[in-house]
Length: 272
Image (cartoon, rainbow, N blue to C red; front, side):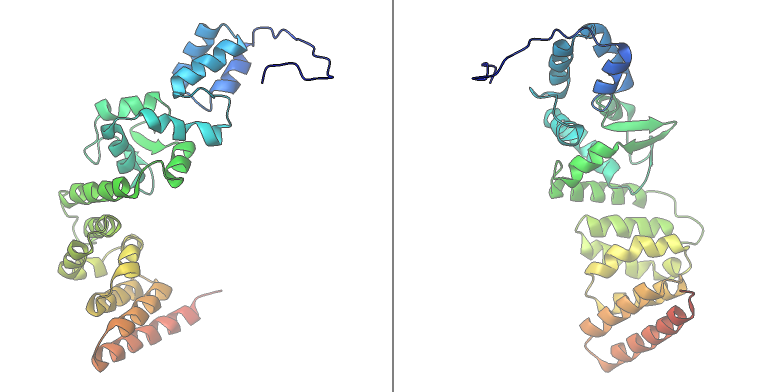
C-alpha cells in the first residue's frame, strides 16, 4: 500500500537519475547488452521509468523481482511455439551447439538471442543459466522436451556415419531413448552393436539412458560387454545385473555372471 503508516513519520526522498553503470547493473541480468543500452537512453536514468521499461520488455508488471524468479520464466510466456521448439532443441544437447547444426536457422535464433535466453560465442550457442533454470522448473513441458530429442535423433541419423566408432549411432540411440521411442532405440542398437563396441568412451556415455530403461536381456548383455570394452566397469556390472534380472534362461544368467565377474575384477584393479 502507498498509504502513510499510522504513527510513523514519512520522509520523501527524491532519487536523482542513475548513472550509466547503475542502470547496466540493474538491467543486465534481464536483457541483452544492446537492449540495456537502449533502455538506458530511453529511461534517462529515472528509476521509475527503468522499472516500467523492464516490465514492458519482460512482459511483467513486476520487473523488480529477483532475476532467479522473474527473468527466463517470465520471458517464456511470450514465446511462439516455434521459439519454444528451438529452445527445447538446444536444451536437448549437453553442451554448446553449433549454429548451423540440428537444422537451426538464424531466423529462429535471433529472437532468442535478442531476449537474452540464448548466448552466442562465435558459431556456438548455449542457453544462458537462467534459461536452463527456468526449464528445470518446468517452463517447457516434458512433451516439448521429448519431441526435441526425437528431432535431434532424426538430424543425427542423417549425418554421414564416421569410419568406425559408432558415435553417430550412439547419439541417435541416446536421443531416441530420451524421446521415449525405446522400440526404435533398441532396434538401432541391435543393428549397430559391432560399431558401438569399437567406439570411443563417449559412446558409453551416450548409451547410459538405454541401460536405465531397457528390459531386453540380450540388449543388456551387449551393453554390459560394450561398457566393459570401453572401460566402464560399474556400468558393465549394472547392465549384467539387469540382464540377469530380466533374462529367462540359465545361459543368460551365466553370461551375465561372467561379464559381471570380469568387470568387478577390473574395478578392483582401478586406483581408488
